[in-house]
Amino acid sequence: MLSFLPAPIRGGIAIITLTLNIIFWCIPLLIIAFFKLIIPIAAWREASTKMLIWIAENWI
Image (cartoon, rainbow, N blue to C red):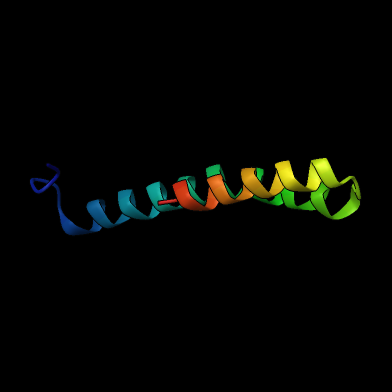
């Protein structure tokens, strides 16, 4: 798709895309994990575990 672009441009686009992907998935993952750590309610821990697993499974 972007084969017409020079290699350094494609590499830069790949790095930017990877960085945005990591930021997009890592922020909610860390926030939920932090609240799971500090909130000792069993129902919240089960729900947050499901959310964390969902994030991990969908992280590309």
